[in-house]
Image (cartoon, rainbow, N blue to C red; front, side):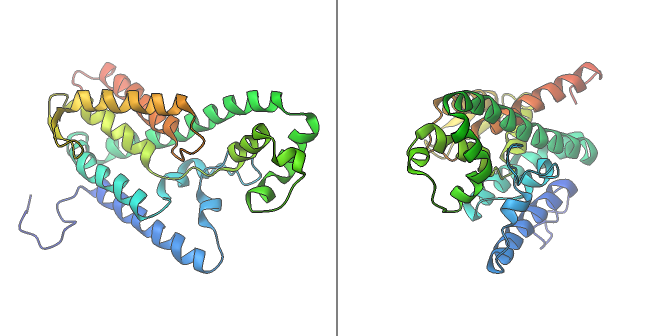
Length: 252
């Protein structure tokens, strides 16, 4: 490696470098399109399949969209820190396959969990309220007024939110990367920022996974984080690594 290069991207492996560039460009495109009245989040972000905005391509495109600079920065920092190591170990082809599968898997798990929650919510609504939520839910999300007996019903409000909220971000694939790093390098010491203490990678991954499970099951309506998408990325990553390990004499 040429550590003396003046190009900050020179020592980043090819796939990670291109993923970083694409994600940054997509955020800039989102801002530019927004200034022109175009909501790229609605077009490329992942909607539940019951939403009129759902399109199959969103299973892929959602992972290249972000809700803002801070969201992008966190994901890209983790991708750079851990992804470059994995790409050097696996090679670009296997790393890209892993990244895409964990990202798609994260989106799939998020859709399934949303559907499970919607089943119970639908059962709690009258047929009239459910039909109104399906037909006019997106309008209500955009600020339109609805019948007071519907919009004052917590189950009705949660139903339209679940059906029409957009999922964006590379977090699912990033959590898959965190899991892979913890499995490949379990005893590597990582330094936490808060609190500033060292922790082995395997314990960091376990702790983070348990936290995401707790946060997801808590179902806090004020929490705007797709915790089960994160767990989905880890789940698909674990399955994929186990498959590769089973079909190879080495771990990777």
